[in-house]
Image 1 (tube, helix red, strand yellow):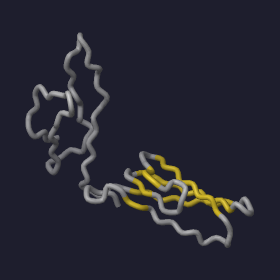
Image 2 (cartoon, rainbow, N blue to C red; image 1 turned 90 degrees about the vertical axis):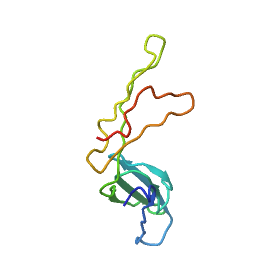
Image 3 (tube, rainbow, N blue to C red; image 1 turned 90 degrees about the horizontal axis):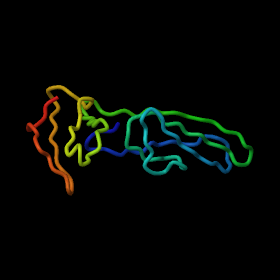
Length: 128
């Protein structure tokens, strides 16, 4: 299960099929993301979602699939910033909207500016 201390996990699959040579291919859906190993039995993933493995026996052409769902541990914050307007000469500042982020008394958020950025006003910390 994904959480703050384990942001990447490995899915472990085994092949119990007949002896032979196999090709493996993982796909992700419903928000899933494969970080590494999409063509092996044990991919690394960093997002909750559904993951499907297709195994093809290269000698016979036979194939089979298996699926697994990965979820976030309860209490893991999910920050979401909605797309913002573009900063330009007529619009020199924008407001970032994080209202779709995890909310409740257990969550608080703080903002920082990256290189060249500037936070004009910000109540600290943000509680959603």
